[in-house]
Length: 243
Image 1 (cartoon, rainbow, N blue to C red):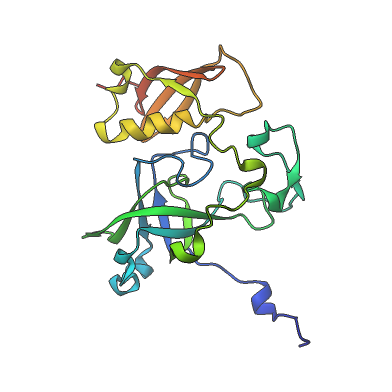
Image 2: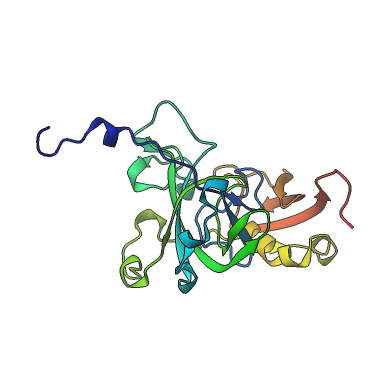
């Protein structure tokens, strides 16, 4: 083997799913486009039976944030494109795939910084990580967990390219109290913040269209007119109006 070459084993590493995310997002539509954008909405990281070993988490309680390495499991393709169309740019401008966080990549891998709220010990699922700021669908496979180190992982003055205006397209959310009350109290803040991130395709503008978004067992129905999002109904997953 020449210098700079790698073995066949290194060229074809098989990743093992160590855990799965349990979140409020049943589909890709509505899931935050980045971690940390929607605060106040707890999610859980449940380890696969083989990895439910308490000692593997020893010391993790001393960290406020973790990194989760996971898979864009709904975006796996046999081919790849060197350019993609980021929603941030309206879906009409192409950028190099490695200059974006698009799920359509040579390897469908994602990295999320999550706030670690607590570690819960359960009887049936072992130790579960309760986190805030998840941007994953429910059931997303997770390949690794690492601690977040602020003295090396944080670069607040770094340039952010075309993504610098990350909050520029936030919407004003009109969530009538009667409809908001249909959600459990612990979901209301997170639901409102999630909707403010504008879950609709950025390149489509139809003020009359009613969107439906699966969220924690509810269907949130809303319209978007310019910078205003209005919730028009909240329906339970059974199809009946939530009490």
